[in-house]
Image (cartoon, rainbow, N blue to C red):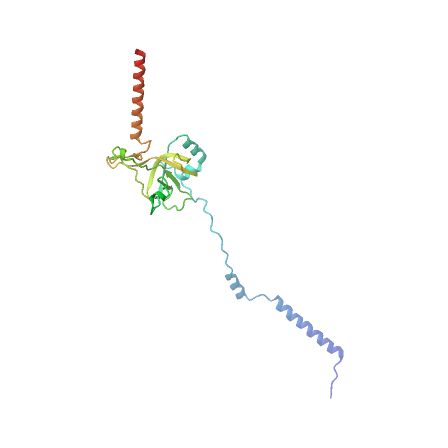
Amino acid sequence: MTRIVPRSLVATLLSLTFVMAGCDKGEKKDKKPDEDEASAADQALTVQLPPRPDFNEGKIDEKYSDNAWSIYGLRKSIDDNIKAGDAGTEVEVRGYVQEIYQAPVCEGNVALCPPGKQPHFWLTDRPDDAGKKRAMMVVNYAFSIPEWEAATWKDVPNVIINKGEQYTIKGRFKRFSDSGFADDRGLFEFIAYKATDPKTGVEGWIYPPGAAWHPINKAAEEEQQRKLIEAASKAAAANRGK
């Protein structure tokens, strides 16, 4: 015997079916990802932050206990110190020799080789400072001696600079040297450096042989001036006696 189902009941059952299907879809849509999967995704995301800046980089005491300048100290008040150097003020600076200029080796016709620069080296505040960012050029520390003056300078202590060693140097802090070098950050014109005299064993100021300001040349210049003044005095006295 066939049972007839009322149409109203069929419609009710169909509507309930659609509602349940909709609920299932909504649950799937709102379902959160598995916690393990979220953790794995977080681990895959790595953020690379820049290193913290070192605000003390390159800084050092402006002066040492004996009043010698550091390179940092000279450049901290660069305008005032350059002005003093241009006026002829001599100061002392202490630092490590970072690099010594070596003239390029020229092969072939020497006449066609470009001339090398005058001797110079670079000084830094720390022995491990690399690059020229904090280095200071030091010029006029060595001169060629003509053959006719060789005997004069034969036994005179020479300036010997070794890479990596620390020196105290006396000179003038300038932007433009008398020998043609220039550096906007300031360079140092060498006058003398503190070293031990190989003959006497006494520490003192060693000047570059052949330099116009070497005590030997200064003494010779003063002697020449004395003779000129003496000759002029004698000539004046002779004229008065006529």
